[in-house]
Image 1: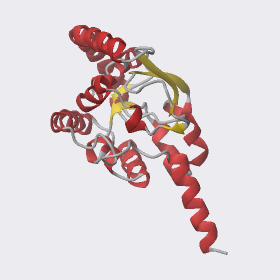
Image 2: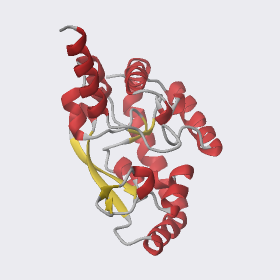
Image 3: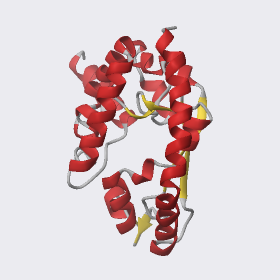
Image 4: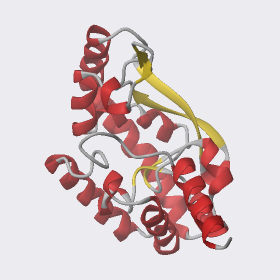
Length: 214
């Protein structure tokens, strides 16, 4: 293991504790706004794979309505997005509860984003390497396109980060993250929806490959 990874873990804990104290009022206001805007829990909790594929529960502020259907038809992510949720996403305030994940050692400030557990079945061995480091709130893929780039591009950037992790790279990603938040870059993959499920993309690509080889 690179010596920097030990230092990184200590720095993550210290800065997460300090930041949590500083943003506590913002988190309180966000929690109140969520409750007033729509029924449902304040936090969105979901199982995600962390370092070495170990499963943990990631926490975010809820940005969508809990209803998934209307008049018998399924609602898209953008249709379920609340007014408060849209603002929280654009400002990345929805990510603040993950400071608790950092304090517990499950996440880092910088690293590949923790994705859905079901995606594990669709990764190639090379893509699986993104789990060799602790997942982060922001990462190399996020500052190079976030939801506006393809899954294949994301995973290449994640693996590149794993091979080149350093203090200076993390510092660069942090500064670019702040800039991207300020200009609200790459929040959604399109005007009408959030990022498509990787499992759906993987199945589609596998089907296309089968059809080409028939």
